[in-house]
Length: 348
Length: 221
Image 1 (cartoon, each protein chain N blue to C red):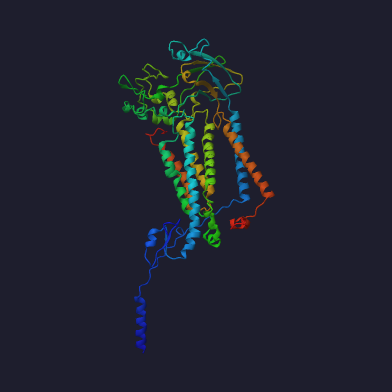
Image 2: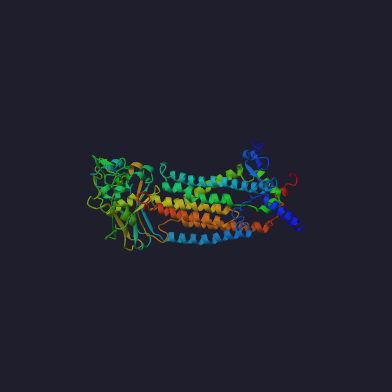
């Protein structure tokens, strides 16, 4: 009986083992696939909203005040001369400026409004000059500017590519239209020297304009667009060209002409002798000469300070408004009456 | 019947898999229907609705910002951004946070959704995506693109700023703005979400530095 029982149980046992075990189709558990990763769930309570607005206000208002103070410290002299430097008896300004036989020298007198500490930056400012026009921005060949062996690369430089079958170096409209007004300064009858070195980006001088590339065949055509270049100076030392070829982003822009390392006192007189060569008359452009000091923020611009003050003030106002709302009409967090099925008692 | 319905659910089981082949969702047992509808259906609707609105916003803010610049280049369609930056915008700078939030974000836990089945009605009433929300998003996009363009414009208006530096400023501004907009709308912050958002901003800085170091591009230097 024991053996019978044993046989029975063993057969039962083997019967159990014989039926196929259902393999579990359940996917392996992981926190990522079950979307149970530890999480933080921030909720916009009135305390948080008011605190964040106050914090933003407290940070922005001092920055705005500091920026405005810095901008007010900058002393700037802006003198527009393109209309004043054309003699009054000239009716056709375009013909006047294109006539290379007439002398275009002009004298301007500037008065220093406040004490200016050196270094004083001298800029020329152009208005309504679209250096950011698509065809203009493309009209250059960087390989040719960098490498003397690639002098014949003139793709994209139309229409200033070749002259008499030979490639123009540097080719393109940007180089062709380089600004060519010159300025000399006198301070209270003493000559003021202007430092024209290091006015371009150092990376441009080292890597973009080759020290073995010389201008060739440049401004030899019937239409002269701007400055003619000295063919014995390599491109990496032609700083006016390098400054001009860094195309400006907006239609009103300034470009660095040089620096003055002399302090100027209030009510000093600066006499500028300038050559009014550059043609801005055919497109209603304006030319101005700018002398400016600079601070940690740069030149004279109130906008950033005003923008920070506006946003800071708005944040304070909103914090105040939300505090009032919270005190007058508070709403309990987790109030069940706002659930959709509790709100419309008439509907479902 | 499965094909005519809005959402067709098939059960795969003893009677074969024909229902599964015709359906949108397939599951093993009838009792799974409750979770499919109330939990995953709700999450799916909420994520999908937000992602559609966010994607409209993300792309429109970028394109509008480029458009406002054209008004100041004598209408000549100059791109202040480099070509590669505008390609990478959709690819690297802002795509990863979108995907991560679309997969992982949850507004309510599955326990809450199962306990209050009427929360499913939010989808039935089109509360996540409707005409009003769409036009509010578009107005918000217009406003944000104007701020994005004009704050750097007025800051650098009469200065020595060159075109490629302005482009870099606009690129980094739009990427930070779009990512912070997403960050303000995320309801559950998980480690992966943090990595995606702040990592994208860091990746943008890195890519911009790399693109500006390639000598053959015009923005070099």
